[in-house]
Length: 192
Length: 313
Image (cartoon, rainbow over all chains, first blue to last red; front, side, top):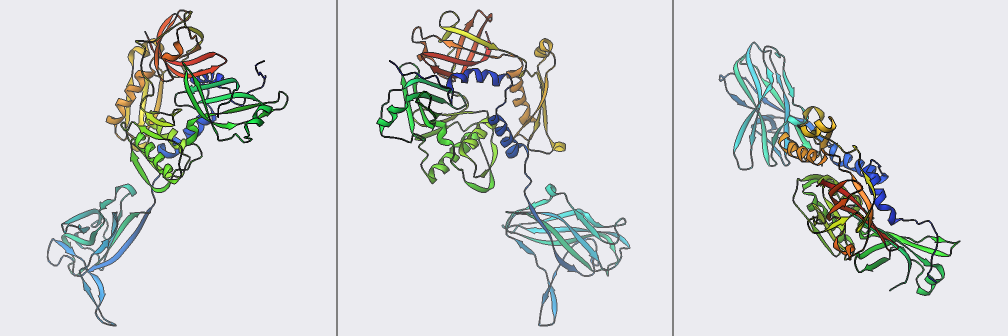
């Protein structure tokens, strides 16, 4: 006699077609919910990467505007002896790609006329250069005490790995020409 | 090892889990010399339905009837409980390529018993971050994001394709009262959409690109049926709009699904597999349709199918 047993099946393959129709009519299984949540987590909600942002500097330049309207390079303080210091034109090296987020301009004297705008001289790995102006980091009639500006997170100006960076100060009819200025760069790198 | 069993039941499904179940008298199992059946494989051959292969996942004993039910899933079970790598970077590639990458990485750690793997590597790329998740979960995610289908057959060959199966509606027909007994035709407006706003899923709300498509004929017949869907991996309106259009064209008519029993009158069981599109003549529903077989289920000499209607002919 063939073996038969009337037992409730743990897995019922014969119920699969009807189950398929029920799903088409709106039945949502736990598996469907898990897949939807996984899709939501992975791709629909795009995770913002973590950025590390910091200000580098200062660089200095004396007598801004003394040579007329120009891009004035800046210098860093370097020791020339145990207790003496000089200055040199130096750039910083970025081993990783990042973004220029803004900067600060700090004058030693109050502006009397014209503008001084922060720019960044970027020297790329192939030795080509580019001067990138940060027009919102400016000392002018509105911001006469100092310049400061930060760009939003996803609008920073990108630079590639292997670049050298140095602030420049662009003057237009700037006075007083005896003003000395300090400049900081704000850079951002994506956290690993 | 060949075993005579009772009441074999199994199902094949597209983009879903194949299942099987059969009964064995408890005292008969002892003679096999194996007491632990979990994770062992089962193969079953039918001259017309083809071969079923799967992994035993349950062996509950019914004391009252002194029987053991051996049950399990198809070979997509080999994808489960295998961990993908953890990497702190996002990767962008077509879903098929990512799926192949996942299987290859996991196979490098320990053999998955998947003999071969193939995937269509076309389609829009998706972005993915490897977080050490389950391989089956990852594969399902790729398939759903990329509108693709995957399966592992009884030969343990993995495939992820834009479509599994073929359109054989020009050569294979199932006719009610001849070789097909219609059980149910399900049709409602759950999936009916004729006005869709597609938005970019990868951007914040204020920066989302959009694409809108509406089907006038469908609106005139069924009324306005609107929704909004976020599409991952599409950042511009030019990318979203064609996808919205193709989705609305597929959803603008409530087509429904059918289920029923296929009679093996002239060896009809051998003429199609899950994923194939057939022609159905349904006098009860007053319709001739092209429908795609999504599920085949067999038990006790009866083959039951569920099919999604693709077109009313």
